[in-house]
Image (spheres, rainbow, N blue to C red):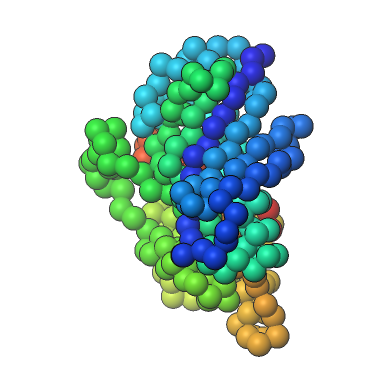
Length: 305
């Protein structure tokens, strides 16, 4: 095993702040005994996070060093999960700090999204860093956008050639992402989950359309559980989270003034539903890199409720 250093550089998403301290520093304990040093610069509106001694397998350094920043899909499969984990760690550390400042110190000038990603770098020495391969730009609520470059354009064209169309469910998912009220965000995300499983099952077996669209459908946990397993070979890895999410959705619908959801929890639920949807897409389009990229990214962005 080998050790690397990781630097995360982020933009602090804030309105004009009343904070007079230009720089603040925090230490964050992470998983596997790792520690992060997080520096917030209010004047420059940036956040810099360092993490030392991240353990990687032998061969990782030489292999990843040869991959361009926007060529994530060229990584050997054995390194993809580790690269995604490395992306996630400085984001989580920075998020922990900013969430406490925003919600516990009531810094309402900080955006709900908290920050956006500028760059994640890695290396064996602080003065010799490389851009970490990525096909996305991740901000703190784990939304992602893919830069248009030669590789991503080819991926989209390949999907078009294979007649892969966006699910209608994704429109509801993105409406949930844009929604500022957590109550509605949760409901829209659950609608996206309901539409997605039906759309995917119909794509796989068009004969199911009349059953799924014309008569009351089974509960969502059945659709993502035994029915998905029957038709596509496996249950959703997010089945329990979806079941819990539906229970909360029902409380929000039937007791709109008696059940409250905080924004962070709603954002995490949206990430779970997005990961569940990309898992469905991966089951029906297993050999398409555009879908595979989304599957890997959302898989690592989803957090437990």
